[in-house]
Each structure stands twice: as C-alpha cells, then as structure tokens.
Length: 278
Image 1 (cartoon, rainbow, N blue to C red):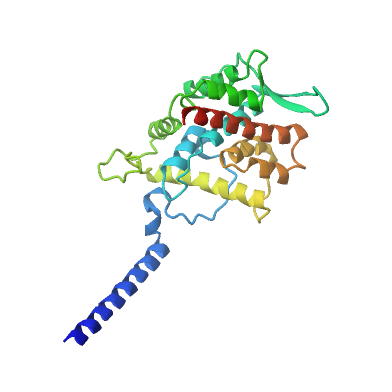
Image 2: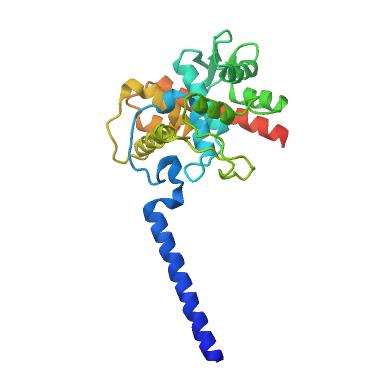
C-alpha cells in the first residue's frame, strides 16, 4: 500500500512539474506574462525615431515608472537631465567656459527671466535658477551643496502625477477600476487605453533605436534634424553620453560637453537632495 502511495505521489509530482513548465512556455509565447493590456508584450523589437507622447517628458516618466514589467524604474535624476538638455536646446541655458588655473571649467549659464508656461516644469527650472547663485552659473559642486541645504522633494511635486494627468487629459488612460493591480506602495496601476498603449509603445521603440545606436548595433539611419530631441530622450534613458560619443561627427564640441554637464548637474541635484533627507 505504501509503495503504491509513493508511486502515485511521484506521478502527481511529475504531472504538476510538467504542467507548470507547460504553463510558463505557453504564457511566454502568448505574452500573458507581460501585461498584454499595456503594450501587448515586453518583447518589442521595433525601432523608431518618432518623438513619443507629443514630446511630453512627464508622460514619458509616468510610463517608465508606473507600467511594471515594461520599465518599472525610478528616473527622477534622468528626468532632470532631460529637462536641462531641452532647456539648452531651447536657448535657456548656455555653455560658459572659464580657465581659473590650468584647466578649463565648464558651466551652464541659466536665463533667470525665461518664461516657462508649464507650472511644474517652471518649478524645476526655478530651483536650478536658485542653485546657480547670483552669477547664474550652474556648477556641479554648487548645485549639490544648494540641493543639500534645501532638503525636500526633488521637484516639489510628483512628476508621475503630472504625467498621469496628461495621459488622462488626452484620453490615454482607462477609468479607475478596483480590480487594477497594486504597486508595492499600494497605488493602483491604471492601464492605458488601446490608443494610449499604442502611443506609449513608441517610447519603447525610441529607446530600442537609441540603445542600438549607443551600442553600435544595426539600426536605421540617424535623422540629424531631430538630434537635440533624441539627445533629450537619451538623457531620459541614461545613455546620452554614449550617444554623444557615437554621434561625435554629427555634434559640435559644445553639444558633447553639454550632454555630460546636464547629466552631472542632475545627478548632483538628486544626490544632494537625497543625502539631506536620508
């Protein structure tokens, strides 16, 4: 009797293991594992140079940080770097070089009376204005010390909330549903509408293109007419410095310097803020 029970147990265990393996194979093949309602599957291979979500960086931030299984990242300092480079491309920031000793020091001069209509974007801009001091020059150590001495939220608001608001206003997000999954912090994951998912998918396709460019992998030809916008999103994806290296023949020396400065300034602002509040 005991021998029969052992045989039955082994048989059931084998069936269970085979069934589990088969389930995961089917799930992987059909895309069930990757939240079909959002992008269909995580395995998006297409590349595109189209600027996604009408160029709204807050919406892009929301998609990257609040759509699990797709990105699920926290990119506050990278969002700041993206805004810094955008402001540079719009003429609100200018490169200034000084030689106090034997080495050239690079700064970004910020236009303190610049008009930015978006309230939240202007909030971030004004913080960098304050961090630049009386001379209006943004320097990495200075930005770090200012941020450290002014602890609090990096933006003074949640960029994800701003991004969600934009997606809602453009009809790209499904209504609130009590059955929606929860994040680790207890917030509901609002799925995108089919139209919203299609538009957000372009964000993944743009990252695929930029990542391929940064790694020297096969990709479509670079459209240099959009190179500043592409570098802005390169900052958002954390690969702008690699892109600047690969595109050095298409960029000016100043653009290459500014790419690195934007990344370093944003990181200093983020580090100072975080270390002050730890």
